[in-house]
Image (cartoon, rainbow, N blue to C red):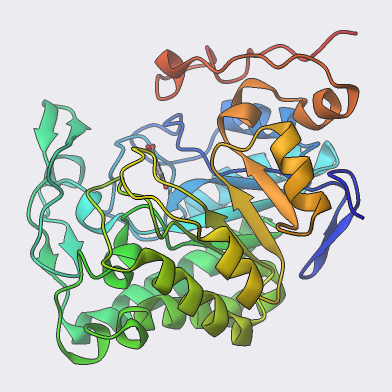
Length: 356
Ligand code: PHB
């Protein structure tokens, strides 16, 4: 029976343990969306993760949703990320980049006045976005025409190429949390007709086409996908999240991806259900679980074969040496939400490692 420290074949790479770091938006990139030495230090500190999955990174210019999140849409962005990948590799780690399009979660005040794009003309309700002019309501996106979608796919492809230039070990397509691909996938935000709306097959089409394009660049064995069928974050809902996840798990087999990264729940605990069991039953590749796992539950899930690996978010944020702590049964630092998105080193590179 595997434990959290049994090496795992993940597509083209082998991870020395099954304790991954989940992608975490930390807003340390600045308004040019460039990676920097502080980010390199942060990721290198966490290089003992089986796999580091770097934060949501703008695949295309003009799609900022967090103001100071990173991008990967120019040679300058690729060069800046080299600092990170070289530091992680020098520290013995492996790192994928999460390729992301924010869709309707983007805001004109973060993007030179340009209206965001989306699957349908529905704004995110019940939340606000941080902008230079304070917290603002989300806006109704411009609906992408079917003819616009090749441009989106090409944007992801180019981002995948820049991620290669940047020296990553692979990429994760962000299909979760109410961002563009998820807006197409779930029926609460996709009211389209035509080839990209209606049935599950149609709603998943854009995600599948993006996976194909990114896989053309990287090879399928260096591409992962993250999904969050139950998450209501960003005002998301689907009429049948468990059915959607189950269907998707079966369809994804043909892509032979490095892994499927499944967020099992809802940030706000509104939508309930078990997606892990049916996805595990259907999906034949490496399954990475995420959301609220502690070390014990993670070990049980991996030991019983329900998951192949577990991605820790805030646990890894607060504990740069998380695998060593888990192995030793050492106490864990608590994450400080007040510094999740603030600039600078505080709450970013200053969490202490464990001293025996
Ligand atoms: C967040 O910063 O709250 C956030 C960012 C990206 C996600 C989910 C949440 O995929």
